[in-house]
Image (cartoon, one colour):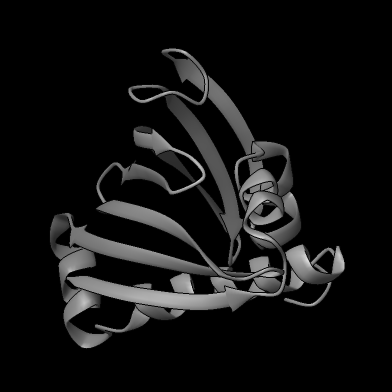
Amino acid sequence: MPYTLEIEVNQPRAKVVELFDNPDNLAFWQPGYASYKHESGESGKPGATARIRYLKNGRDFDMIETITVRNLPDEFSSTFHTPGMFNMEVKNFFHEAGPDKTRWVTENSIEAQGIMMKVMMFFMPGCGKKESWKFMEYFKVFAETGADVRKMAR
């Protein structure tokens, strides 16, 4: 299921990319984030993998991120795999929208795995898109104000 989202962040592109590119910042704009552990390849480079752990709704799960494109400040793209649940490709593009504005565009594609996830995606087709949009809104708040959105997302 492919979809594209975009949001304008009231910060210069260099600042947005700096904040986005730092895994230490994930905790501030991704509610449920628990940890990030580099696993293989040269950290931050195409082909590198990392295990990202989330705690959501009383359960924890891991996503394996594989960086596919790192052409900053223009593009940063990755695939995410959660065994038995889904595969996801996320392409992030950062465009100058003015001297202190950045237009962040994501092109996303989700492929459900396993019968349970396929049924869930069938009955709730916008679920992934809504979650992606929330993360983008949280990042915007974090980038513009420095706020820790975990407190807002409760």
